[in-house]
Image 1 (spheres, one colour):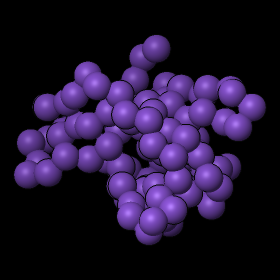
Image 2 (tube, rainbow, N blue to C red; image 1 turned 180 degrees about the vertical axis):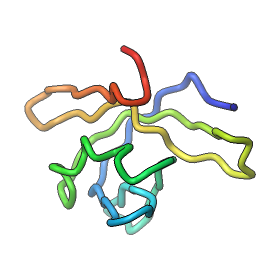
Image 3 (cartoon, rainbow, N blue to C red; image 1 turned 120 degrees about the vertical axis):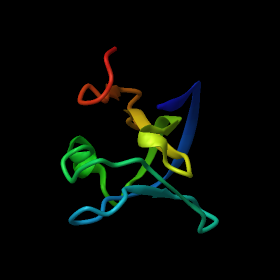
Length: 92
């Protein structure tokens, strides 16, 4: 397992696919960044924010020795300043 201890802050529109697709965030310029996902329920805690502009804290990770890296969502920041941690995969 490879991972980064650097936390990146990204803002964009949250896209949550149905089924086993990769969740992603789409920037205003049309670029997107997809997240590591091992199962449909892994990011279900973000589903209330689908289609909204959000700010996410992510770390780069390469779990299971893939040939590519993905983002692993650590937390979401809401417009009012509230931070919600991903407690499914990470301990705070």
